[in-house]
Length: 323
Ligand SMILES: NC(=O)c1ccc[n+]([C@@H]2O[C@H](COP(=O)([O-])OP(=O)(O)OC[C@H]3O[C@@H](n4cnc5c(N)ncnc54)[C@H](OP(=O)(O)O)[C@@H]3O)[C@@H](O)[C@H]2O)c1
Picture 1: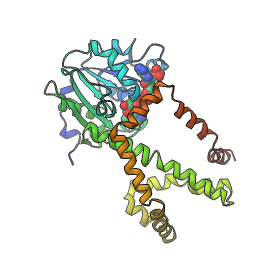
Picture 2: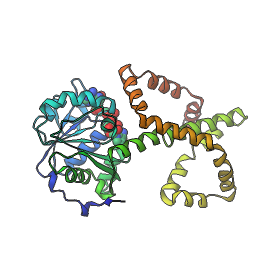
Picture 3: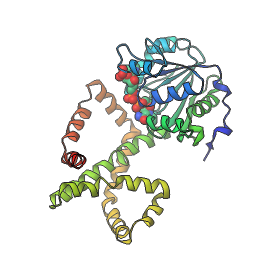
């Protein structure tokens, strides 16, 4: 594994460059502030009427009137708006991208699935921090950093890899480790984890476990404490000691239950479903669904958010918090 730390990375390729950050949400705000604190010349580009303008002003950053204005004269442009909006943003800024400029991403989707086909005279790179922007920022403020993956999709100037690594260093990833990857690998692994592991399967299994206990006559608050409340303990143990150390840290009773039960839940059918999800991601089916969802006003996401807010498990959490 090629894992770079600050001392391995030359910051010079970013020296004196003007950086435009398009989007000021989770990643945009964190990366722009980390860059600003590192002494870089940063300008933020937002769409007309954007609710984020006030946040940019409150943080004391320079705000352009549009993504196109921010891009004009910039040497490096980071596309940090939602993935499903990036193709339209690229179409808007392409006419003003100077030849030899670097176009940066924090996720591989737009390039992996051809939603954006960058002009050949541009460098195209990715630095994908492996965690939320809020943590990228707070770690940076503490003098620490977050692991990130970096990759180059297009090297027009011969400098793309050096720019990518210097960029990763500038937002703090070199403090924790900057690991070489590709747009395809980062994208496929990230989408897979979101759908089939941490963000898709884990919440679904917590809720199913909660409902099974309640259906079996256990009170909602006890079911919640068991099935949802202990997740933080698991995460902390896994982070500190790994999966095997976590198993050894719990009681023999818990460990035997985990060994016998875990393998029954994650059986061959679950593994086949995981393989099917990976195949759908690689075929582009998920990326197409994301575009359809965005173009039709996010009907599935809106419905899922409404259902999650009114679920029994959420009522149990509220009751525990208010008691
Ligand atoms: N979330 C994470 O922590 C995370 C982690 C790793 C990588 N990434 C990647 O980082 C990128 C950004 O993700 P994110 O979660 O940070 O996005 P996000 O928080 O959803 O981005 C919201 C920002 O984008 C702006 N925006 C929305 N639509 C826009 C448009 N059409 N034109 C211009 N600006 C627009 C919003 O402004 P308005 O106020 O105008 O809506 C807001 O400032 C994605 O590629 C994502 O995959 C994210």
